Image (cartoon, rainbow, N blue to C red):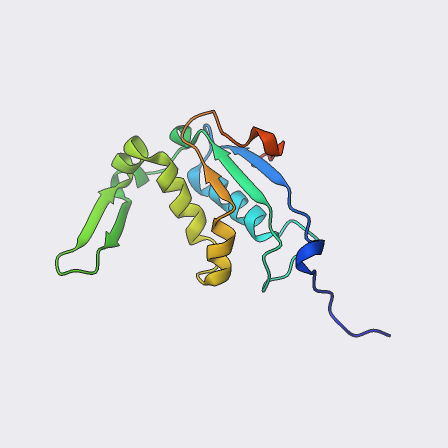
Amino acid sequence: MNNTTYSPKEGEIERKWYVIDAADKSLGRVATEAAKLLRGKHKPTFTPNEDVGDFVIIINCKDAVLTGNKLDQKVYRHHSGYIGGMREISARVMMEKTPEKAMYLAVKGMLPHNKLGNKMVKKLRVYAGNEHENAAQKPEVWEVK
């Protein structure tokens, strides 16, 4: 009996492309599905310490919905590292100006916060509108439940 755990090699990993349409769907629901696909949790060969995930394209981010009072109460913060360098932007302003950044930050926050997560987030493409420039990869449509 072989007691070794199967671990996929880099050449054995088969990566697909998926398109997720965020129109009229909750931003968080779309982000969780994208994070699941990027990590590879939908595959039987999922390994937590390796990048076995697929490529994800998210379109129509401008039409994603924030539920409750999040548009007015949620605040995105980042710091430059200098004194007084705290920058704040409300979710309403973020969704009006750069909705793709709001989606990107939501997905990135759901991935591991290490080198592996940085590698995974590079397979994410986010677009505010309906058009994307990855048609040559023949992406499959992934339906958010």
